[in-house]
Image 1 (cartoon, helix red, strand yellow):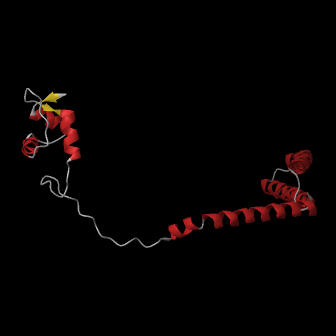
Image 2 (cartoon, helix red, strand yellow):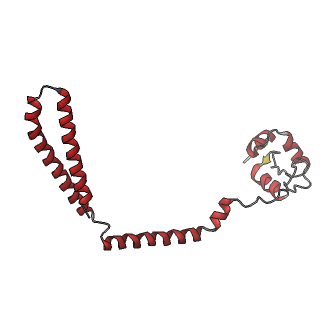
Image 3 (cartoon, rainbow, N blue to C red):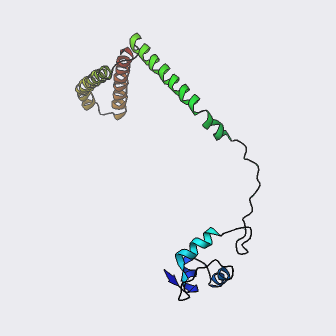
Amino acid sequence: MTGSYQQFSDFMGYKSKAYCVELKRKGKLVFTDDNKIDFEKSRARISGTADISRDSKVEPKPIPCQPAPAPTDMDFNLKNQYDRARVYKLSMDARRQKLAHEREVGNLGSIQQIKNVGFEIGRALRNRLTTFTRRAAPIVSMESDTKKNYEYLAKEIENIIAEIQGDIDAVRI
């Protein structure tokens, strides 16, 4: 690919063709017989002869001198990932052993046992509430004093709650 100073400047991404003129003065551009710039060969020559210390257009970037950052807690924690993983594994093993021991002793039950107990407590609650309505309906319908009806119903409901709580406390899974 060949072209003019402006086309080469656009091709290389330079801001102006003036830099291309300076590259010609330094002998870094390759021209064809018809006095056009050969883009590929010129690019190769520019990159092959680039000397940052002598090129007036390129200024070296200063290298900042900064002390190394102090290690943070996160760095310390990252260094100990293996230790943390090992401790986590040991704690999980201990928890599994504790659960196995409690299951053997009888402190823990299976999910099915818990479901069965819940079912039995639910059945007892249903039966007590059903009998409560049968017992309370005639008494409440005969009494016209709402305060006495409230006291009677509150006492009966408290008794039912105490009975169900006793059933729950008696359950051992």
